[in-house]
Image (cartoon, rainbow, N blue to C red; front, side):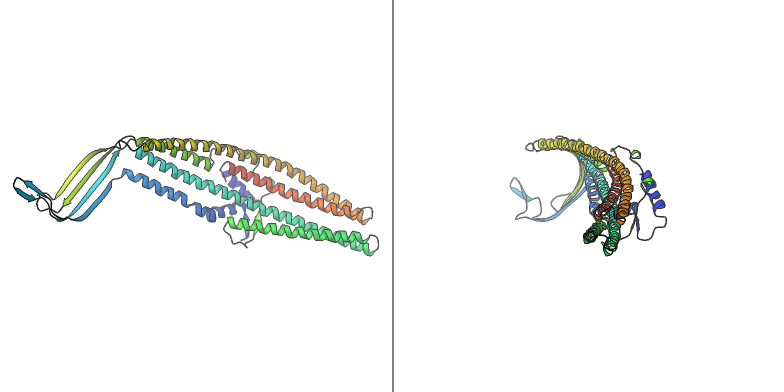
Length: 421
């Protein structure tokens, strides 16, 4: 992560020495996504809910204070027969109250398993949020590079319009001189119209890319700016990014879910054993026929379920199946992460080679266009050759733009694959 921050600083210093208010670097966009993304705002509630669930689970270890009060009205007061004498033992109508302090002492891991499972779920939720954040940051980086790519391709299309316009001017001059046929002029007109259509299409792609970037960074849809990207020589290389995936948030979160499932087994097993508890109580009954209307008590008790219709066995089996399911899910996530990392690394290698090929192709395409333009002016070449040369140059420039930003995006994907965006 430190190396990544240094790279970003180098981007800012190298490419944008004097940032304007509307200038955006990749790191700036990532920070906006972290702070303001609507997707992350929604996901932020999951860790908080998991924390409250853990607090609830921990309450089992704290004393439980209970109050029970009421007023009873009977048809007749209870009486006792003592030979030929009948005497009442209570009032017919009476208020009563009971207050008790209950404390669980030991239950053979049932409550401890529940608390441990809740803690694991809370940690899993935190890692889950971090994983979602990584995904949003990857989408933001992809949108950032998509804008840059569409801008570069748009510039290539605009250059083609300028080149075709110049060729049309030359064709018009030669046609006015009677040197070439009207067919050359018509070819130039058609190609110029097609090039302008490409400009419109590229402008639409750029607008769509901006819309996605603005959505992910919570900027106004119509907001625009200057995106600053580092030259390829200023960014980190494939070799500087480690291949380890052990710190990916989704893998760490799944490991916590496994721990929660293991704790669930201990909780299910604890249901087969008794619970040891203590109680302090005070019971009051308004009864003038007894000496003590308030009874204070202390109880040390044992509570045990003897039979529950095999519900405990079913819960234990469910807990074991849940653990196996989480274990299989962790293995699958690990394989997917390795695939993501290796795929991104391979894509970066391919893009790096494509950059070299595209740079050479542009140099040759520029020379090819120059030669064909000169040949056409000297009337030893055709208009079709000039137009084809312009198309080849635009294609080469487009390929270079795609390869450059594909390489940079592949490096970001590698960072995402190891959980370090």
